[in-house]
Every structure is written in structure tokens, then in C-alpha cells.
Length: 204
Image (tube, rainbow, N blue to C red; front, side, top):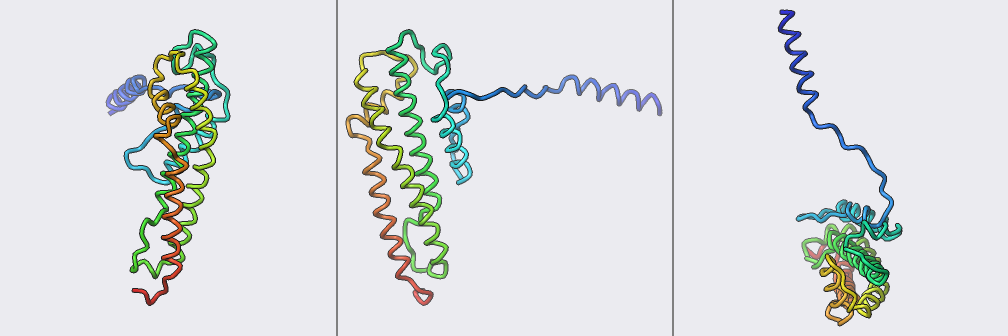
């Protein structure tokens, strides 16, 4: 009996030694570090968007790391300047996208007549969606400005930044215009709100 207990203790000790040790925590200081904490979800819930907005805002307000550790190869000051414009532009775009995703979670795209019993709740939900859409719009002017600055340096090559450069091109050329997109969303939302406000409990 005693030998069995000893054997069990030895086996437990051996298993404990083989278990992976938790990674040591490290401090997060720089834009690039905070950006790596941002993540996309196939199905995104409000809490996911809020978490992403938190990390992206931290990245937006943080300092850049040393160019040696940038997300693109940096060889001179011109590349470093363009990299910073593109990175900040991309952060702004992601903040716009996340606020739009958050708003879409609360948006009632159609005021169906059978939703009349929950008129108050639906109007409150629309208010949250509207706030998220309007917040998204606050990032757009800076995003356009950064894209234009980056495109004025179009002949400065940057490895590993082609996706950001494509984003800058689409913004600078007018192909991507979140001001128009958000304006359309707010106009539609206002119509849905009006339809809900006209409802009463006898509607259905």
C-alpha cells in the first residue's frame, strides 16, 4: 500500500516537471505591441469589438518602437516617416471598422411591425448604434490626412507594408470613403428610428 502511494507521488512529480511553465509576463509599451493584441473574430460580439477598440486606442496613443523592431524593414529616415504615416492610418481604419462593427450589433436595420411591443428597447439600441457610427466618423479626417501624406511618399519603398499602401491608395483616390458610408448608415438609421417612433402596441 505504501509503495503504491510512493509510486503515485513519483508519477505526479514527473508529470509536474513535464507540464509547460507559464510564460513570463512582459510589459507592453509601444504601438506595435498593442497592435498585436488586436484580433479579429469570425463571429464578433460587442465585447470583442470593445476589447479591440481598447487595444487599438492604446496603440494609437503609444510611442513607436525603435525602427529596428518595426513591422516593416526600415533602412532610412524617409522609410521611417512613411511607415509611421501608414501605421497610424491603418490604426485609424481599424478603429473605424471596429466602431462600425459595434454599431451593427445594436442596429435594427428594419422596423418590423411585430417589434412594436419592444419599441423602447429598440429605440435605445438604435441610440447606441448611432453613437458608435458617429464615433467611427471622428477618425476619418485624420485617416485621410495620413493616407495623403503616405501617398506623397509613394516612391519610398517599404517591405511588408503593401497592404497598408493599398489602403492608402484607396483612400487617397476616393475609392474608399468612410464619410459617405457612415452618412448612408446614419440616414438609414434615422428612417428606422422614425418608423419605430410611429409605432404603438396596437401596431401588431
